Length: 257
Image 1 (cartoon, rainbow, N blue to C red):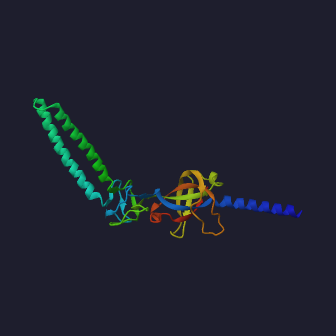
Image 2 (cartoon, one colour; image 1 turned 45 degrees about the horizontal axis):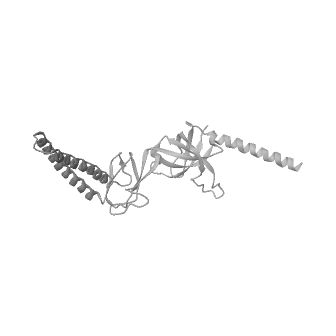
């Protein structure tokens, strides 16, 4: 009899908890990040030292804008000029050889050698320009410089040159428990809160991740689950300016009906 009462009481608690959860909606932890996340720009594969840094943290940059030049830039630029001069000379020689051949004053072998010289130097110029491009770091996308890791005179390390993000569109990436993900759908409204900004920030679910993984955002509650299996849900915020300077901020997320 006592066992039956305990079981009945436990079932009542489960019903009450389920009703409360349904009333308050699905909630989760999340992090703030710019459109397509944070991009860390590295230098070339070999060791490199920054010769000139052309941007600072907070600067907005355009795609293909030059962000920095490396210490090898001047040497590689001179190599491009050297090959270009040699190629211009080889082309003039080929032009003269072609004219002489038409007048029957030149052999076919000499003309072939002149053509070969031009082709070799054209290939060398392509290679020299490619090496010069490696001494210049450009922005791959439009965005804002979020952090600088190497300045003029410093070697680019494992953290790369700088971090870049498109803060014109800001997201909250919510980590929803795998057991709750069936209650979240694209277009659903969501609200994010944090002591770091005044009032809630609203948005809508733009995309739901395809992988189930362990959570990255850790709850400050010492008794909270630390190894939960979650799905990332990407929420496009209505007002990106509120959190544009708060990339990686932890927030609390509640999904609407």
